[in-house]
Image (tube, one colour):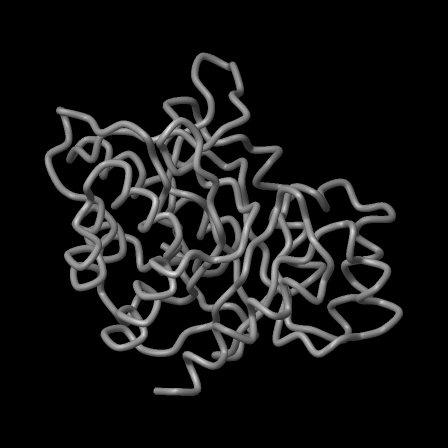
Amino acid sequence: MMNTPASKSLPHIAGIGLRAPHYLEVLEQRPALGWVEVHSENFFGGGAPLHTLLQVAQHYPVSLHGVGMGLASPDPLDAGHLRELRRLCDTVDPASVSEHLCWNTAGGIAINDLLPFPYTRDALSHVSERVRQVQDVLGRRILIENLSYYVAFRESEMREEEFLSELVARTGCGILFDVNNLFVNAVNLGVDAQAFIHGIPAEAVGEYHLAGPSLMDGCLVDTHSARVFDEAWALYEDALQHIGKRPTLIEWDVEIPALSVIQDEARKAQLRMDAL
């Protein structure tokens, strides 16, 4: 099993998710950004997007965040997807690589969503083997992100934090702790946020994510379309106290505002880290 750490590492400061509307501003003005994260799949195939990313990488640490691997899918891992990700990692040499704990394909049909699954022992074995495969192909450790979900499964044999802890023990992967996802699950489904924070292995947490959800029909939806909610900031502060400082990302993917707005959210995260 290969779980070699990346040759770089992210600084324990706040960064932002870099999206296309801000590419030109970032390249021309080089604002003060701790680090940037991009979605890996947007740069598969090279071309102008990859050229832009390589320019950005000359000035900021870069993290690659995948949204299409489907680690819990029943179908075999997409060999072409893995090749593209390996090629991208070799080209960019990112400071971090991450994927969601979800499934997105079945019977050869791809679903454009991050779908939950029951936390069973069989699922743990399945996901563990696939994480090992990915790390072997990439030659590096990856971080696995906890998911926002809107249904709970009777079949689950363990809580999410127990599943993630065992996944770390079996594969050597790390955890990308998405605080907003935990907040959404706590509000919608009554997930015990404190049990999650105290249940995952602190030493395995490589990053935090923060974002703002939307309220739809009485349900919080993880849209990444608003400022971070006060309740999520409180959970982040709890995580900092228990787990410690980690690279922290502000995500904003829908109704993307001016870059200064996202920078302001990053400053709020930085102030909380600096207060420790």
